[in-house]
Image 1 (cartoon, helix red, strand yellow):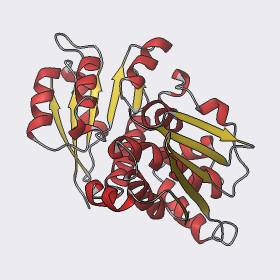
Image 2 (image 1 turned 30 degrees about the horizontal axis):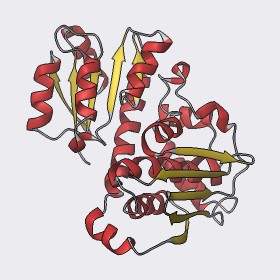
Image 3 (image 1 turned 120 degrees about the vertical axis):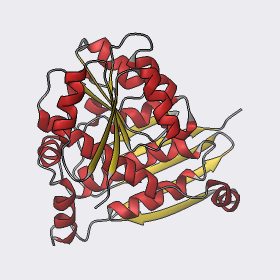
Image 4 (image 1 turned 180 degrees about the vertical axis):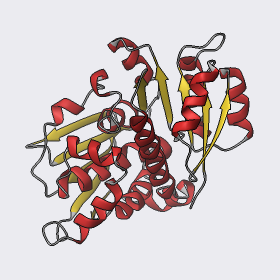
Length: 296
């Protein structure tokens, strides 16, 4: 079993004690620190798999630390869970747009924190698996103008996300968005795992098992998704298709503060905000076109 290294940052000792108690499991190694300045020194000095960050602290606050983390290319894929009493919609939006993939409003259900930490670590692991030697891949892929690929599993999606990201001007940024869209095509598209069901499975730590079960079930195992790309002088466009029934994609194109504490539901909005110049769903939602403009 892997020991995940987690850094908890809060100026209130009781809050740190609560986090340590919630994450009291063999899979976690939780380090605590009481200020954002000390947290930054620890992040630079040791590798962490996730950060749980209080927003309102004296001196350098959590939002400023979050922006510092996300401005450093080394930590682009480091998941940050912001937990705070600042629950106004504009405050939630501000935190998420600064790079907090997860945002918990105090007080929260301990099960929610545990599920969100596990979800964050799972997403981070998939992104690491998608890492490729962008320089070498990019050199080979520079000659490609178009291509098509089929994929069926989560592992397939991770590999393809890294491979396709090498086509892009900023591979690390593109990889995050591509991974989100490819995973969505498997989970929500081909495997029919809806938003509410995914939340329940996350809270019960059963999502990965359910994905594997459905991939082996005759109802879903023959379904594949496709991704194609085409590059021209204006940039590159990716088209992703799945065999699902679609979904109400309009609800997920923007950050919705009402869903900020859920363990899922923000990946599409983040991909649109961070990774792509344009993101367009078509038809019932089982086709998405993601574009990255050519850098001038």
